[in-house]
Image (tube, rainbow, N blue to C red; front, top):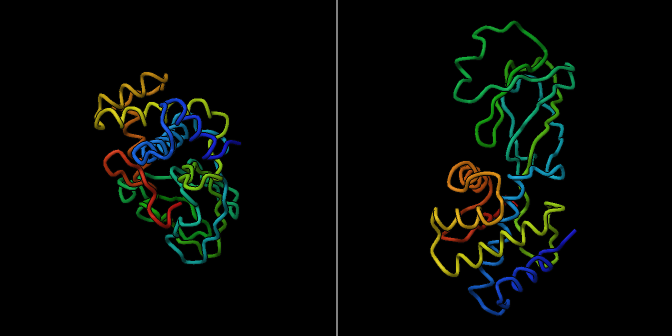
Length: 221
C-alpha cells in the first residue's frame, strides 16, 4: 500500500521538479488526487465497494445517507427485515412510477435518492433494516503518510498525475489538454465525453474544482 509521499516522489522525478517549487507542489498534489479519483471511476476497484446497514424507524419516509461516507453510487438495497430487495426508482420518475395506492405493509419496497437523502415507500409499520451496497470515492490525500485507497494501480496513477502536473504547468486546462492526458495513458473512456462527465460528477459529490486545482471541502473527506 503506497503512501502519498511515495507517489509524490515518483511524480516529481517524472517531471524533473522538486517539492520546494510551490507551483510544482500544487499541481503534483492535485494531479495525484485527480488521478486517484479517475482510477476509481475507470477501474471500480473492490476496495471501494462497501456494505452498510441502516435502520429505518417505524413511520419514516426518508433517511439521511450521511453514514455512507463519500458514497458515489448505490447499486443495491436489500431489506433484511422482509428478506426482499428494495426497488430503486429514479428521482425524476418517483411520482410517475410509484403506485398511487399501496396496501398497508410493514416493509419498505421502493426507494429513490436525491442528493444525500433516501426517500422510501411505503412508510414501514415497524422498524426495517436496510442493507446498502454502494461505491465510494477515495478520500483526498493531504498528509504524506496518507495511504492510497485505490490499490494495485500505482503506476497508472503516477503516470496520469505526471501528465496532469506537466500539462498544467505548460498550458491552461482545456478539453484538448484533457484529451492529451487521457489518450496518452490508454484511458478506456473518452476524455471530454464519458470520462469527463464522470469526473465532473465525482467532483460534485465531494470535490470542488478551482481552475486546475481539485480540493475537498471540509466535512466530506
